[in-house]
Image 1 (cartoon, rainbow, N blue to C red):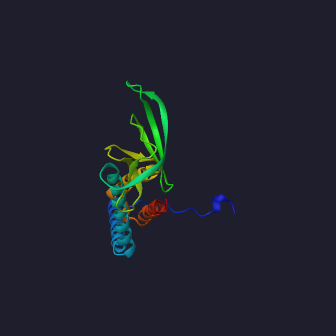
Image 2 (image 1 turned 90 degrees about the horizontal axis):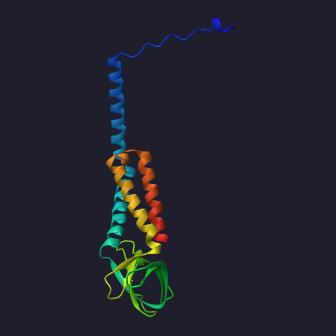
Length: 199
């Protein structure tokens, strides 16, 4: 059987503007019904509550870094200073970071990047934690107003800022109304919070 003998498909008639409008309206109604059903599910309610809670946790970490937080006083038994190859007008060398070992054997590395007075080997210093997760995020020296970032807190601060932006995008563009995008951002937040708790 050659190609000339094959039956040709009948030409398709294009939809009229009225039929196109009806089809679009039908699709919109169908999507709206699907959305209303999804909004009534526990998955939608609980995942949105979870994501909003994560948003406030991330905000709280950043606020505690820049504002007052829960401070604890520690006492050092060893201080190691790393310098940068920079000097000021007073011939003072710039401090890159300070590694402090407290009396319990815990090591804290403060990121300084400034010209400061070097603390004594045995000194009192403070470590600041956020209020919710109790993560150590900054530190300073007793009776000194300056506070410095803990090196191990950098992942907390970066991820918190990034996920605040991501969650804002999700809610501004109503991506939380879609099942797949809502579950995706919930998985990301779950892994992040779990990582924060484990570190």
